[in-house]
Length: 275
Ligand code: DGL
Image (tube, rainbow, N blue to C red):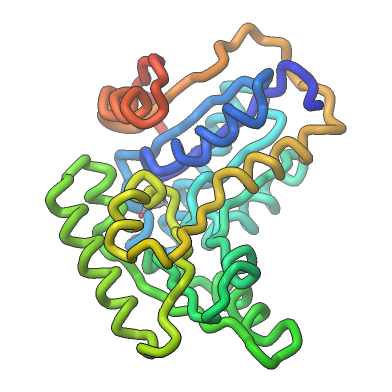
């Protein structure tokens, strides 16, 4: 069991990390969470690696100045891909848990060996992602290696962030069709990795577009389990009387609060956070 009273920082470019927070709240019933949505700088997916790293460093440094943290969850595939090494280097005393597209679980599930991956351009272009994909495509018995079909979903996280249902629908249709075109008719994609934390909130729509034979894979639950493991042996740093959940946003906090209510059923008002 985790120690009661751990404090965990969580950040994403916006509301997407709430899909990870949902799993964290379920996995760690005694922990307290401080969630930061960097909406003023969203989306991260089409920014340069330097920009994303600079924002990630600022957010973590400021969060730590304000609140003693026992762990930090980078609830964003893009920030993990581009910045987690730099964050670990700067904050070597703080355990980090990152979010990566779930290629390995997908490879274990796929029978057709054709796996679709939807993610941001930044994640798919990163060295970290390339290494992960290559390792898996060349691992195992070699007889039936998995084939990953990558689809950069420009604009999709942003449309979800802004609650633009019409654009979200159009982009999901476009990207699922593009993925289907990439694969052979006799061995279609049977597994789809949701490689951006915004996408699980559109899982129903994506499932409908892909059809029932495709299994959708996301990372919230494994990331939450990993966070529990990381906290297991650590005594909580602080007994500060923080609430169970603090929601902060660098822009339009009301929108973060509204999405948390709609998606997670949480009645926590979000505050504006200058960073
Ligand atoms: N939710 C983030 C991810 O998992 C970032 C999306 C974005 O800001 O582009 O990649």
